[in-house]
Image (cartoon, rainbow, N blue to C red; front, top):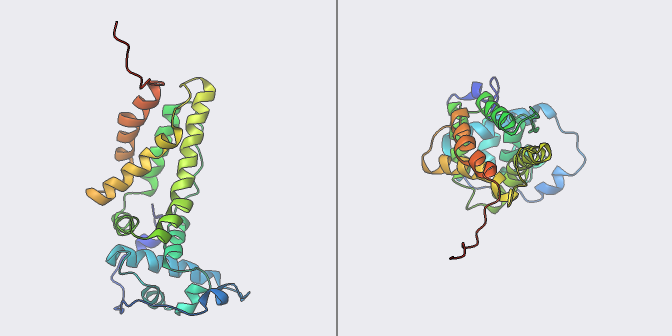
Length: 231
């Protein structure tokens, strides 16, 4: 998930910091006050947020800790983000390629290309630690869950929906009943693996979902849930 040569290079132990809860009165006004923001600070703050998330988890992560690790002030963060939930999700988005629906000409080819992309960008040890630290907090933090769903999960659901809609248009499959549920299966199984096992999310895992769950489901066509009349 995190591109090589960015956060992965920063996986060393950070300097000691004090993890305490913090609050900055009026920070939102500063953030929208029109002051010029140095974009070079954004990368350092995002890298620090992901590095600390991998080491201590989301619950212990604080804006103070991120600022100290990046050598910045807390106000510098609040001028850019509303809080740690928005910062962490923005950091993840910055280190992922924009999701684009592949168009190989076949459903299996499109899904295989999505699995290949997972292999190209996921599976590093730090990636797994980051996602475990994040996934464990999602059920308990509504701000984090909303930001994560809007900026990370929903774009990938839209990509999957596009892939299935193109397959329907080509005549490969029948229209998919409950498409929203089907396209949610991969994200749901990914989060389950991270929370319950936890193990790295690599191409082989994504391929097992595609071949073992998704393709059999959509290639079977509509299934009637009505009982068969007794002769």
